[in-house]
Image: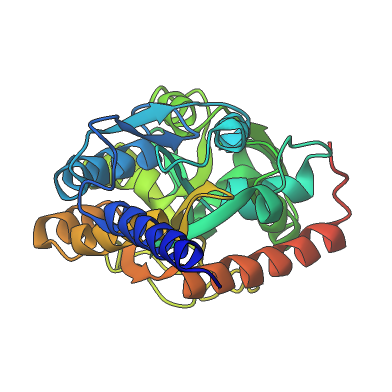
Amino acid sequence: MTASRRHALVRAAAAFAGALALLSSPVHAQSGTPIKLLVGFPAGGGTDAIARTLAEKLKDLLGTPVVVDNRAGAGGQIAAQALKAAPADGHTFFLTHDHTISILPAVVKNPGFDAGRDFVPVAGFATFANALAVSGNTPAKSLKEYTAWVSGHKAGKDTIGVPAPGSIPEFLVKMIGDKYKLDLQAAPYRGSAPMLADMLGNQITAGVGSVPDFIENQKVGKIRVVAVIGDKRQAVLPEVPTFAELGLTGLEDLPYYGIFAPVGTPQPVLDNFAAALAKVLAMPDVHERLTTMGLSVKYEPQGQFAGRVRTYTQTWEQIIKASGFKPQ
């Protein structure tokens, strides 16, 4: 190899190392360009509140504004398609829960994205429980009282709101109906916020959604959570039994929350964002805020979170297939 060739290789290696160092720096080479944190549900819902709590702290650690970009509709499908279309330059991330990544591709024929091919997991940060809640004008104070009320006062029929079609809440409505031999129909909404509005306005008698969606109205007595999924009661709702306690098993695996990026985003960029997220989650005020919203907060690095997503997705693919549900 000639001396000039060796010098050229050294210069190239030095330039590459410098680029990596820049990507790994606190400002992440953002040059003040805002980071978009996509959210697939409307402002005012539980996922939006979580995203804004994290974004406020992330901007300081990343050295650039972090803007929550609500792309509501179709159970997060619109936001996921936006993530797929975004450049893999570290300026766009997606904060979402299990529905969009693990469930939606199994219930929609053409979702417009392939989570395994188009996205890369960045990190997980929490699990949560779905729950059945009854509206304020419903006399029931427990699942037993609710099913008895539907049986005795509504001729065994009722409509229960769910935040998205083809979602775990929709399958849960069917499971409750089958268990108690009731004709329960799911009414899909465009997110939890409009569903809650109808619950608070007593337009529907019950809804199935996440504990973070329900917790604030539960605290002030406007709705009543009567059962939660999981293998143990939720710390934020210690008085509310699990479905398993009440005899409805198979709902012990908890859904997740995490961050995703477009495939091809440089690994140092992903690592930098994940490191900032870990620091934010360790902040006492953030941990307390998310916990009071009904989350079980726990940082999961990329590899561990990817494994959780893979296992959870496979489990629910089997459940959905066994239910006879036909992708729409």
